[in-house]
Length: 79
Image (tube, rainbow, N blue to C red; front, side):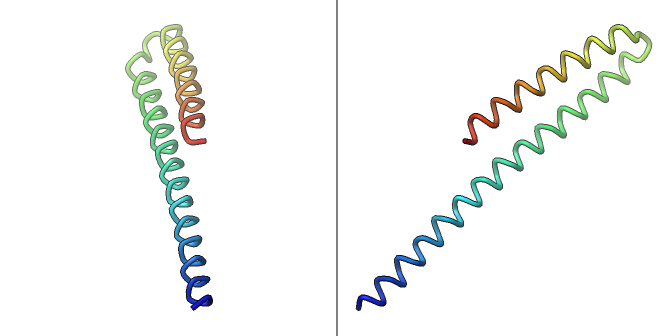
């Protein structure tokens, strides 16, 4: 009986660890998707504003700043 209880406890511990890994994986996936979206937006903005270098640099700078803020927020919520 004791061995059976230990087996069940081990399985529960493994399940908890798997759920933890799954949650970490999902959080990382969200971060990567957010990064990809931000890069795509930066490219779209750069292409749309290519006639004005000053405007392009300003918009990309703002987008990069927003990206780092969003990334920091995501990292804080994932911890």
